Length: 462
Image (tube, rainbow, N blue to C red; front, side, top):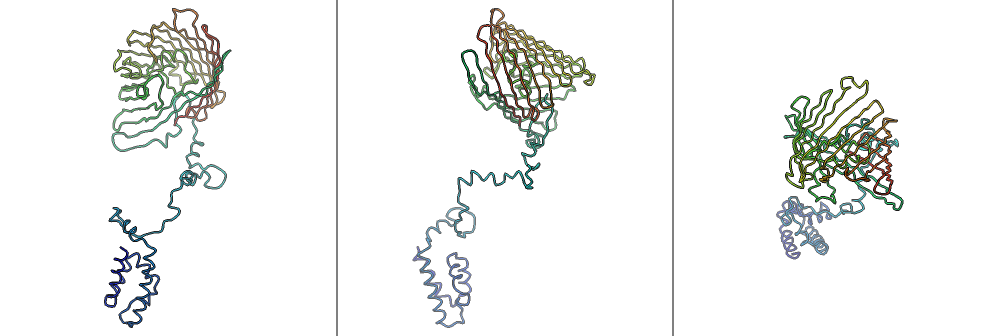
């Protein structure tokens, strides 16, 4: 190919005395000949009015330069890179490969820090307009409802059927140290790990929530444990909400509470056994100054093990005697509920609750009795239990708590009562969005050795 191109160029040079201007334009478009022009002074280009000797001298220089380039340039390689041969839609201008274009694992690994400037003003302070600065200065005090660290950054107003959506993430995990007279173990356990979204449907009074558990469970297959919440909630009726879908079941006060606002690392024993479940169905929630209620008709299935294992009713009523006093006498709640249904066997759980909160003091007491129950598993035992909790905020971000918790898994069997004495500290760094939890539990079992547990938990809501 080099020889063919050389012959073509030589022919063009022989006719240069008559087509000088056209030849010059051709050379400027040829990337190789362009280099030749740069090497030969402008005054030495072939010009019709020059003498034949002068033009011959210039021609010799061109031939010499042409031969030199033929030895250094791989024109076949250049031809393979032409746009029409590699489908690149661009003008072909060969460029030397620069070192900075070469991929470097080191550069890729650490290039993140090129823009990781938290001190733009060079004053040894984290700038408030950075994400870290916003999180540090963001103040969250309220602890009775879930709050999210990145709520402003993860809230969007898209076009289409959804007018507003907020993406959320939640994590709770704890280090557990267990010991009795003959054994000592330390482990790390997950409370929850969830991701999802909450949002509003445009032009309606309907919201939605969907969250998933990406972490597998050893007790269930992956899809049975995958969905945490998936429901629509409509507030068209004043003082009421209608919930349709897969949502938390109100079995007991604490058993129906969100995991994000629990005072301890673990729920009470009656909540762990009777409640803390979700069910697929429809529920009606009413909210007034002096009374709240929650009535649901669900499938008795748990974790999508069956499509319809049987019918279930769950009802709960709270009476608020101080509901119209604007909190002058604190907040007093007296409640009770019933969970009954059929899932291969009949089950019934009844609950009573008393709670009082005044300024920094918070107390609660709950009792439950079951003739069979449908928690994580269906159990036909006659069980009962109760707990009492007291908490006090010594600082808006620091709370001390204590609980006495008793559970009898089978009233027909003697000597199997389990008691737990728990003391703990909650440090609300950013409300419930960023919290550290410290719990000590003394476990007293009538049918086994007494034991101790020490728990250090972390909670992050994004």
